[in-house]
Amino acid sequence: MVDIHSHIFWGVDDGADTRETTLAMLRMASESGTTDIVGTPHANAESVPDAEEIDRQMEDLNRALDGKPRIHRGCELHVSFDAIQDALANPRKYTVNGKNFLLLEFAGQLPPHAEDLLARLADAGMDPIIAHAERNPTLAQKVDQLEKWCERGVLVQITAKSLEGGFGAKAADAAWRMLSRGLVHFVASDAHDLEHRPPRLDLARELVQRKMDEDVADLVFTDNPRIVVEGGNAALVRPPAAQPQPWWHSFRMGR
Ligand SMILES: [Fe+2]
Image 1 (cartoon, rainbow, N blue to C red):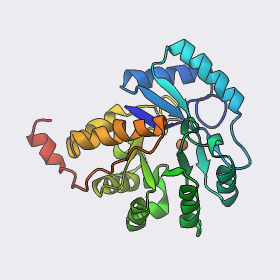
Image 2: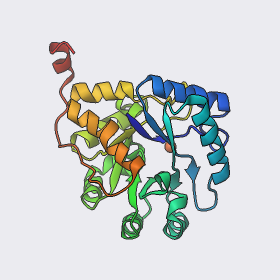
Image 3: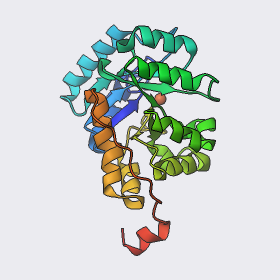
Image 4: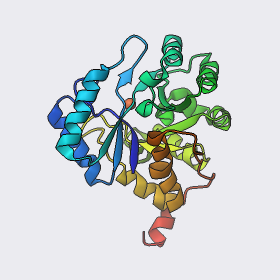
């Protein structure tokens, strides 16, 4: 599996606090089936994590863990007018592995010009990914709006732990609704630590495989996220809209 959203770099945001925590998080990720993980520290136009510090950490971690998992760099860009202007001027400062995909965070209500900002990024050759869409109060309620955006090429990431119910009933409901309407391209951990927000995808993958099917699970946990770390214009596929199986289906099928 490939995890495109995590706060694994230590001391740069509210994610891992020490090198030891980072190493333990990465071991946990690898042991639970993650082969690749993108470190996405919080960023905005005024404050971007120091690129040299991230280089140093990546070199150190790759040496310590021998590429298990492979570590990639990105950021989680807090959407504001200034941030988008800076991303348009310096795309490689923000995109995953300096390629074309950009992870965006809409915190709270959507700005009125959200659609315009997304279109400008796309026109400039960047592929915007909405981070944890199910935890945005507006998008969680207006799934039709998200569908319109998807049809225009906006990509959607939801959080593994939301599918497990770890962010409450509303987030779980929104996450499963988005997934079953075929609006989700990626499931990622958004890991911050070892305990409350761990870097695990395996539990959510099992749920998706059981409630939807294996092809959907492969698509949102492995195939689509791999395109993000590799970059380029390979087609990202939205899973087909489908109703999740009711809980008793899994029981009766003995799975
Ligand atoms: Fe995040």
